[in-house]
Length: 152
Image 1: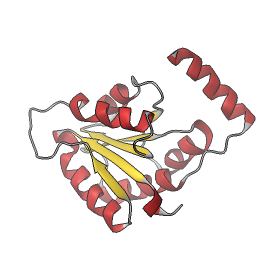
Image 2 (image 1 turned 120 degrees about the vertical axis):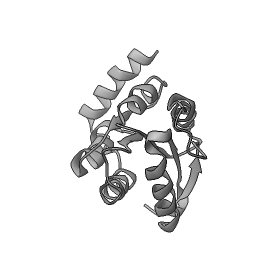
Image 3 (image 1 turned 180 degrees about the vertical axis):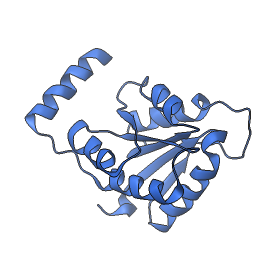
Image 4 (image 1 turned 135 degrees about the vertical axis):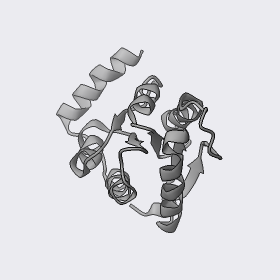
Protein backbone atom coordinates (compact mmCIF):
# COMPACT_ATOMS: atom_id res chain seq x y z
CA UNK A 1 0.00 0.00 0.00
CA UNK A 2 1.35 3.39 -0.92
CA UNK A 3 0.40 5.72 1.87
CA UNK A 4 0.06 8.70 -0.47
CA UNK A 5 -3.04 7.19 -2.09
CA UNK A 6 -5.11 7.03 1.07
CA UNK A 7 -6.87 9.66 3.13
CA UNK A 8 -7.12 8.58 6.75
CA UNK A 9 -9.72 10.09 9.07
CA UNK A 10 -9.04 10.60 12.76
CA UNK A 11 -11.11 11.94 15.66
CA UNK A 12 -10.93 12.16 19.44
CA UNK A 13 -12.44 13.82 22.44
CA UNK A 14 -10.41 15.18 25.35
CA UNK A 15 -9.58 11.66 26.54
CA UNK A 16 -7.71 10.91 23.34
CA UNK A 17 -6.63 14.40 22.33
CA UNK A 18 -2.94 14.11 23.23
CA UNK A 19 -2.59 10.71 21.52
CA UNK A 20 -4.48 11.95 18.46
CA UNK A 21 -2.15 14.91 18.04
CA UNK A 22 0.87 12.60 18.10
CA UNK A 23 -0.75 10.16 15.66
CA UNK A 24 -1.61 12.94 13.20
CA UNK A 25 2.06 13.96 13.16
CA UNK A 26 3.14 10.34 12.76
CA UNK A 27 0.74 9.73 9.85
CA UNK A 28 1.92 12.90 8.13
CA UNK A 29 5.52 11.71 8.52
CA UNK A 30 4.45 8.41 6.92
CA UNK A 31 3.06 10.39 3.94
CA UNK A 32 -0.62 9.71 4.66
CA UNK A 33 -3.17 12.40 3.92
CA UNK A 34 -4.96 12.99 7.22
CA UNK A 35 -8.44 14.42 7.73
CA UNK A 36 -8.79 15.53 11.36
CA UNK A 37 -12.42 15.54 12.51
CA UNK A 38 -11.52 17.10 15.86
CA UNK A 39 -11.26 17.88 18.58
CA UNK A 40 -9.10 20.74 17.36
CA UNK A 41 -8.26 21.91 20.87
CA UNK A 42 -8.35 20.35 24.31
CA UNK A 43 -11.74 20.85 25.96
CA UNK A 44 -12.25 18.65 29.01
CA UNK A 45 -16.04 18.86 28.76
CA UNK A 46 -16.41 17.80 25.11
CA UNK A 47 -18.22 14.62 24.02
CA UNK A 48 -16.74 11.95 21.77
CA UNK A 49 -19.90 11.48 19.61
CA UNK A 50 -19.46 15.04 18.31
CA UNK A 51 -16.21 13.97 16.64
CA UNK A 52 -16.36 10.23 16.04
CA UNK A 53 -19.80 10.16 14.38
CA UNK A 54 -18.75 12.54 11.55
CA UNK A 55 -15.61 10.41 11.17
CA UNK A 56 -17.69 7.22 10.99
CA UNK A 57 -19.97 8.76 8.37
CA UNK A 58 -16.93 9.71 6.28
CA UNK A 59 -15.63 6.13 6.50
CA UNK A 60 -19.04 4.73 5.54
CA UNK A 61 -19.48 7.01 2.52
CA UNK A 62 -15.90 6.58 1.30
CA UNK A 63 -14.74 10.15 1.93
CA UNK A 64 -11.84 8.60 3.86
CA UNK A 65 -10.23 5.19 3.32
CA UNK A 66 -10.17 4.16 6.98
CA UNK A 67 -10.70 5.79 10.34
CA UNK A 68 -9.09 6.06 13.75
CA UNK A 69 -11.33 7.01 16.69
CA UNK A 70 -9.90 7.74 20.13
CA UNK A 71 -11.56 8.44 23.46
CA UNK A 72 -10.37 7.73 27.00
CA UNK A 73 -10.83 3.96 26.89
CA UNK A 74 -11.82 3.52 23.24
CA UNK A 75 -15.06 1.82 24.30
CA UNK A 76 -17.41 4.76 23.84
CA UNK A 77 -15.91 5.64 20.47
CA UNK A 78 -16.33 2.03 19.37
CA UNK A 79 -19.97 1.85 20.45
CA UNK A 80 -20.79 5.16 18.77
CA UNK A 81 -19.03 4.50 15.47
CA UNK A 82 -20.62 1.07 15.08
CA UNK A 83 -24.05 2.74 15.07
CA UNK A 84 -23.26 4.15 11.61
CA UNK A 85 -24.34 1.77 8.85
CA UNK A 86 -21.36 0.49 6.89
CA UNK A 87 -18.84 0.97 9.68
CA UNK A 88 -17.05 -2.06 11.06
CA UNK A 89 -15.15 -0.71 14.06
CA UNK A 90 -13.28 -2.53 16.80
CA UNK A 91 -11.46 -1.57 19.96
CA UNK A 92 -7.92 -2.77 19.29
CA UNK A 93 -5.14 -3.33 21.77
CA UNK A 94 -2.97 -5.96 20.08
CA UNK A 95 -1.10 -6.36 16.79
CA UNK A 96 -2.89 -9.55 15.67
CA UNK A 97 -6.36 -8.04 15.95
CA UNK A 98 -5.22 -4.84 14.23
CA UNK A 99 -4.51 -6.68 10.97
CA UNK A 100 -6.78 -9.72 11.36
CA UNK A 101 -9.81 -7.49 11.83
CA UNK A 102 -9.22 -6.11 8.34
CA UNK A 103 -8.18 -9.40 6.73
CA UNK A 104 -11.17 -11.43 7.93
CA UNK A 105 -13.84 -8.90 8.92
CA UNK A 106 -13.14 -5.95 6.62
CA UNK A 107 -12.74 -3.66 9.64
CA UNK A 108 -12.62 -0.07 8.42
CA UNK A 109 -12.28 1.87 11.66
CA UNK A 110 -9.96 1.25 14.60
CA UNK A 111 -10.74 2.51 18.10
CA UNK A 112 -8.05 3.23 20.66
CA UNK A 113 -8.03 4.32 24.28
CA UNK A 114 -6.03 7.48 24.79
CA UNK A 115 -5.66 6.72 28.48
CA UNK A 116 -4.70 3.06 28.01
CA UNK A 117 -2.76 2.84 24.74
CA UNK A 118 0.78 4.18 24.67
CA UNK A 119 2.02 6.10 21.65
CA UNK A 120 4.57 3.49 20.51
CA UNK A 121 1.98 0.71 20.66
CA UNK A 122 -0.58 2.93 18.93
CA UNK A 123 1.82 3.49 16.01
CA UNK A 124 2.34 -0.27 15.63
CA UNK A 125 -1.40 -0.99 15.77
CA UNK A 126 -2.28 1.75 13.30
CA UNK A 127 0.32 0.66 10.75
CA UNK A 128 -0.86 -2.96 11.01
CA UNK A 129 -4.45 -1.77 10.49
CA UNK A 130 -3.65 0.52 7.58
CA UNK A 131 -1.41 -1.96 5.77
CA UNK A 132 -3.78 -4.93 6.07
CA UNK A 133 -6.01 -5.97 3.18
CA UNK A 134 -9.37 -7.75 3.26
CA UNK A 135 -8.88 -11.35 2.11
CA UNK A 136 -12.46 -11.76 0.87
CA UNK A 137 -12.69 -15.51 1.39
CA UNK A 138 -16.16 -16.98 0.86
CA UNK A 139 -16.68 -17.58 4.57
CA UNK A 140 -15.78 -13.96 5.35
CA UNK A 141 -18.12 -12.63 2.67
CA UNK A 142 -20.92 -14.86 3.97
CA UNK A 143 -20.51 -13.49 7.49
CA UNK A 144 -20.39 -9.88 6.31
CA UNK A 145 -23.55 -10.46 4.27
CA UNK A 146 -25.34 -11.56 7.45
CA UNK A 147 -24.18 -8.39 9.20
CA UNK A 148 -25.24 -6.24 6.23
CA UNK A 149 -28.76 -7.69 6.47
CA UNK A 150 -28.99 -6.41 10.05
CA UNK A 151 -28.09 -2.90 8.93
CA UNK A 152 -30.97 -2.70 6.47
